[in-house]
Image 1 (tube, rainbow, N blue to C red):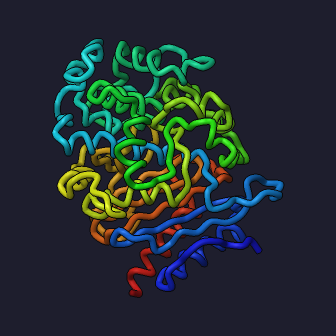
Image 2 (cartoon, rainbow, N blue to C red):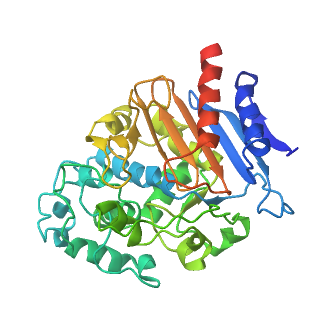
Image 3 (tube, one colour):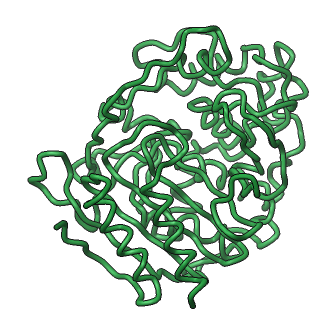
Length: 377
């Protein structure tokens, strides 16, 4: 039996039971789960080990790469700027980033970055060596590139490029990198131990990832999906490289745990305020539910409804009982839930990766348990 540490309110005992089951029935190695309700933590649990040899424990302050769960943090940065009136999400991106208005992109709006509708889900120029870690190179190439489909007409998951697109708007408006803006305006005030571009001082706390058992290669069929995942390539083991950790890749290289994700995202579920800090207005948080697209995503190949920066609950594939529920997850299994109707925020972070980019049974079982706890009162 894996020993589970932390705090769990009696009402949410089912979440703890589901978390324990992830170790006994689903072979979790090390993981954490956290839940806030009405702006306060009701679950903050962790357990297991740092690697498959199970010699060193995952402790209270262990962090790891959460892949695309990072996208919720990048989106939040842009939503904060929109809430302050510093960015108009319906303006052309070129208003803030003039070099972007080339190759038919002059009418691409900032909101298209948030909803994966900019037509730049992958890159034409081969991303080799450390090019992915070079912010200026990545953003210059994206600014010069022609869209792969007509922007604004459909979503195509911008797996690695979304963070650079959002982050360059943040940089042009504030003069700060997205990682620095996130640290000063969101993570710092909320005491969220989450990092986009991580300093050397935190490296000893990072749990290495255990990659998926089968490394499925993308089909080389010329489709938008295969082109997206082929360039820049997405390789699980890359997350353990020093260059990856230090760079800012706001679509994929955030480091944290479930507690830190919930600390950062609880304002989005709780009217813009949490832990004694107001990060944005309640109206600003509501913008995540402004529907941008709905249908089969050109890259993921599954139906997705996108709001501004988050997937939003779809009755055809519901993640919970409430309408105003937003979510996203990370390659391998991490997940973030923001439910404004229930004022509930949930996150699960682990180090043993499963295949896929849209979550798995481990995180979903915890989400179901949290909603069951609310239903039973």
